[in-house]
Amino acid sequence: MTQETGLIRWDDNGLPIFLGDSWEAHISSWLEVSLQAKQDRVLLASIAYSLASKWARRKTGKTVEQFAGDVGLRARTIYDYIQVYEMLQKCDQSQIRNLLESPLSFKHLILASDIKDEAEREAALAEAEDENLSAESMRDRQKKKRRKARIDEGLKSIASTALSDRYKLIKCDIREAHKKIAAQSIDVIITDPPYPQEYIPLYEDLAKLAAHALKPGASMLAMVGQSYLPEILSLMTPHMRYHWAVAYLTPGAHTQLWQREVMTGWKPVLWFTNGDYQGEWKYDVAKSEKPDKEHHEWGQSESGMADLIERFSYPGDTILDPFLGGGTTGVVALRMNRCFIGIDDDPEAIDTTTKRIAA
Ligand SMILES: C[S@@+](CC[C@H](N)C(=O)[O-])C[C@H]1O[C@@H](n2cnc3c(N)ncnc32)[C@H](O)[C@@H]1O
Image 1 (cartoon, helix red, strand yellow):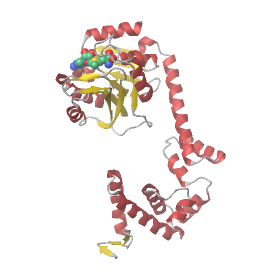
Image 2 (cartoon, helix red, strand yellow):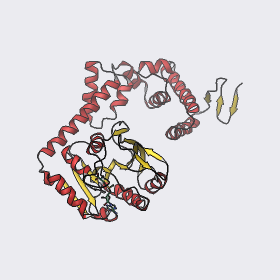
Image 3 (cartoon, helix red, strand yellow):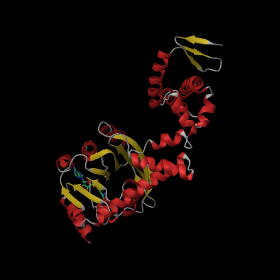
Image 4 (tube, rainbow, N blue to C red):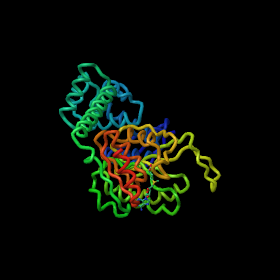
């Protein structure tokens, strides 16, 4: 049965029929907000489908499925319907004709629009056309090229920098560290703060330091124990955006937590970002060998740190560890052609790390 509510009419299949252009404008902005909030996907899909259908018919005389197929979209996902709808709203008839005649699909154009540099974007599109690449292959090839260029550039800058200029060790309390680190100068923070309860307030200082020191979009990986996770998150999230938790496996080093009656074989590495994440896809399980207590009673293994450094940074990047301890992060970072800044309030940690780097 057909129902009518305000300016929307619902047909028998539960699809909305829009009445009037101004309402469409409202729906369009509502669509964006709802999509961001990922609310009510079924309703969203219906609305996107309805709008796209209406505009496809009006501008091309085709069904939305036919038109989407012509421009290289699958027209199955909400995202595709919204793309069709927005494109048709913006394009005049001659632009639509050009689009349909181009050997590249609309999807090529969408994915290429992520490439900020115009010459690079044109080259990617020309390559896709010459080699008949799918839009996804074009994007993947572009990503690989960008990654390789960044690694090559980093390795080149490291090769021309003396080891002594690639690291700095600072003895200070984390609460004072923002005075010693230039704002937005750090590519990634990888750190392992103390876990006992009396240290919990320091997690807020860590988050404040990260918000000051990290470049926009850059990440912080903070290894934590499981016991005080709720407190830690509530102290850190006012300053840094929670992104994900990486599982850090510690095979063979099972710790017994008597208070919780748990034998643990992993710990979370909380991943925060300074604003919107700007980086690549990541796998979320890292692996460590047995922790190394030779340099610090709370020392981590070099293999575990190497896994995180490999995944979350590039050669030439500057890594900050404001809870240096025995210097594992620094030693491995330098070995892996990164630059490093280490901070600790314990002079022995600075001394141990200096000797370890020199060895
Ligand atoms: C868990 S350990 C780091 C171990 C290190 N990941 C390693 O592999 O050797 C934490 C370090 O934080 C330092 N620390 C504790 N409170 C601090 C503070 N307020 N400011 C700076 N460093 C602090 C401790 O001295 C200790 O060296």
